[in-house]
Length: 158
Image 1 (cartoon, rainbow, N blue to C red):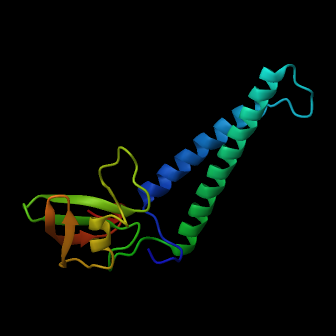
Image 2 (cartoon, helix red, strand yellow):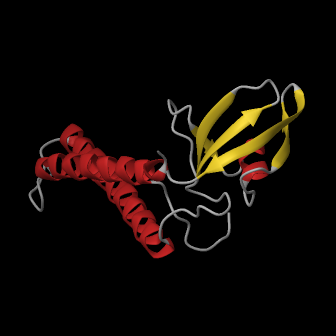
Image 3 (cartoon, rainbow, N blue to C red):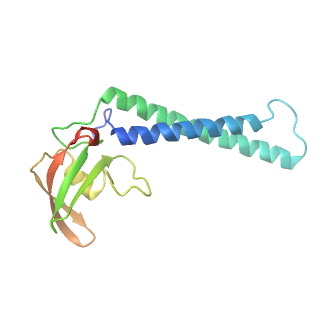
């Protein structure tokens, strides 16, 4: 990654915005359970209050992280379409002739098989490449190659 503001794809932006809405709703629920300045009952009540306070801190931290990432993406603008970068959608053909379209992202979602992190072997090999380039990268089975067929935001492809 460049160290500067990194763009994100439209799909990644939507996922962050959904997570942000969910976190804000959860925060509102947790905040409503805090008793404020009142004395709580016994030690169990105090422990519950502390746990809710800790949960509120965790939610506030994640909300701030997402807000920061969305602001950074707004400064960076849309993903590049001339060469592969974070936020790019890339179609590649592997050595076994299979083709797939992936997005280059920062953090892999557990169930998102189309996301390739920028620091993975494939992601590092793709960064900075252009359509038509052949890349080489390391896999658990050994060295592998692929050809970059096309790139661009998934919303711009026809």
